[in-house]
Amino acid sequence: MAFSVGNPVNTALMLYIIYRVNSILFPPVKPPTAIPHDFRDGYSWMPKSHPPTMLYKAATFALLRFIALTTYTPKTLAPFNGVNGQRILLAINGVVFDVSRGRNFYGPEGMYANFAGRDASRGMAKQSFDEEMLTDIDRPLDKLQDLTPSEIENMNGWIDHFSSKYTVCGRLVNEDEV
Image (cartoon, rainbow, N blue to C red; front, side, top):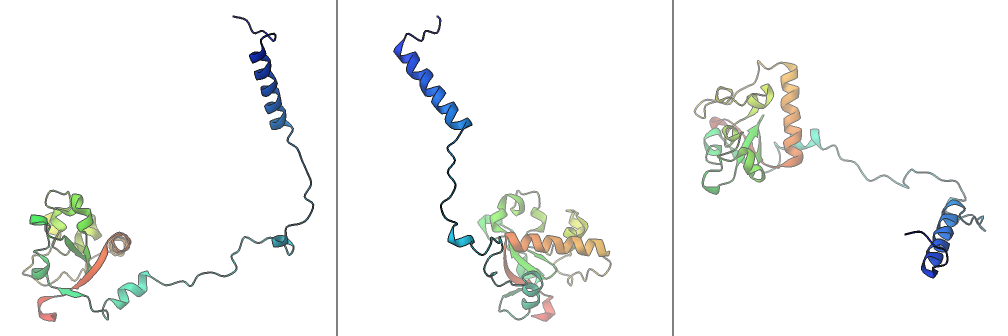
């Protein structure tokens, strides 16, 4: 099968292809007749005004003491472990997060199930998911005084991560502070 210009379909396709290639390679150029009025004074990528900013990280946790959030103790937090479809809560450095949306991770069958309903501060700081990282619910809260600065920074990173992903729903205190 050879290409024949004598065929009217081939001729029409050939002319269309030549027209399209010509319009792509040599587009029609018309100089603008007027300068757009938006750019007479020059162009700036800066917005006319910036939205107000809010210091979120530091302000949020400083205000936790003053906002009327639910106060949990280790014993009142323990039932929120996701068993029987219940909410899943965990605490890091006194801040209680509702991690029910992460049921696959923190639920009874999840890989971090041991943190559910518990104070996970030491485990998050040390990047350890072992049971011995958790404070027994009958003992006072872990003061975390023996953590290194890098471990404290690691724990604060987890607090930032959880704050952006999950809801802060309360604070964790010792039994005698209720």
